[in-house]
Image 1 (cartoon, rainbow, N blue to C red):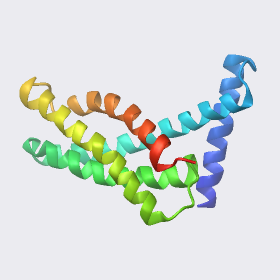
Image 2: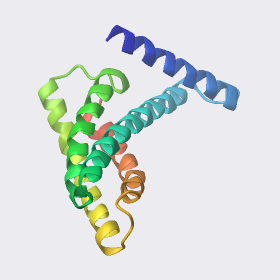
Image 3: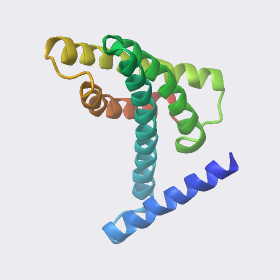
Image 4: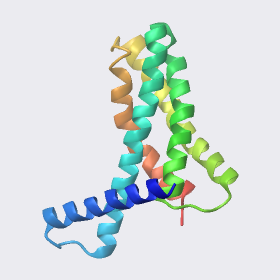
Length: 156
């Protein structure tokens, strides 16, 4: 865990340096920290998207008709991944693990249902490839997840 903490701190330092280079100290420290926190969440989102898509494509490679099963498996595994990173590094939540993980799954549950509906609409109705549809779906559900996590799951 110490190695991951060191790696995470390095990542955040790089984000701050990039922000400073781009914006030339035009941001207050509080604003900079909000941007860093959002960048942290986006990194976790990207990692979770990779985990989710890996599960999804693994199932689709086995049988393309099982795309909803692949999405469901990807959901379960990627939310657990998100919980780990968000609790330990983004929001640094040290509260009751059971309560926080339950709230995490509940918050992602909404976007899971939204994502399933979007996939069904795109694949079965609009005839968009089941290989492309989850990429479109992620663009919609990730910002929704950030807001729910920030305002409810990890509310300070």
